[in-house]
Length: 273
Image (cartoon, rainbow, N blue to C red; front, top):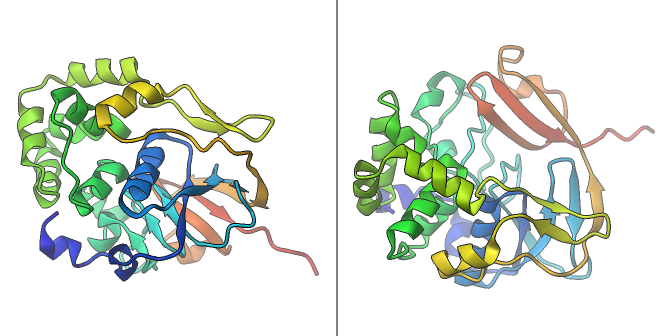
């Protein structure tokens, strides 16, 4: 990652501490959590499905880092657009290129549109997989290859890969047909979700052993039983109905634009006196 960008990330990203990670429901979050464990030793202790927070070991006292999670407050790695208007509040502890660059509804198409895992890979200066398959799979997460094949977004897509200092990924995209990525997504089920079963154990259809071999990282789900810690309310609405996040008269937990005209957020339920 280029130094001028890296220097703009929150202070906590450069420090070590007593942290554990919060996993969400997809490969991007899982790979990001694995990167945190590989680099810093931080283990997954929570699972967040956007209306409920579950905990693995309730007795383990640590500060949380959300991974691929647009937290309104607190530490998180994130790739989402988290502002409706230019003047909206931004969580100062979010490690997010789009937050750093002030991306919002009106400049939405200037956004970083690749995965959180790729962002973390760059920040921690990890070597990319040596194989074309490995590089393609990293770009397949969150369909991070798509921008290259759209003339409207190709230049900004290339710009971000240059900021991440991944010129080899630009070369790979230039020599690879988009259909190869679609086939790879199907073969490796990169869009499969992670969920809790009725007994409180995480499960997924992601081919974790195959992916682990490609990424050369110990890609596995926590084996312990998770229990409910906190319930939230999740909601979605058109960004045409609000001028800023401040129009949402709720205590936000997470917030993200899922496209230019639509947002999803989670908030705390008000307690009645």
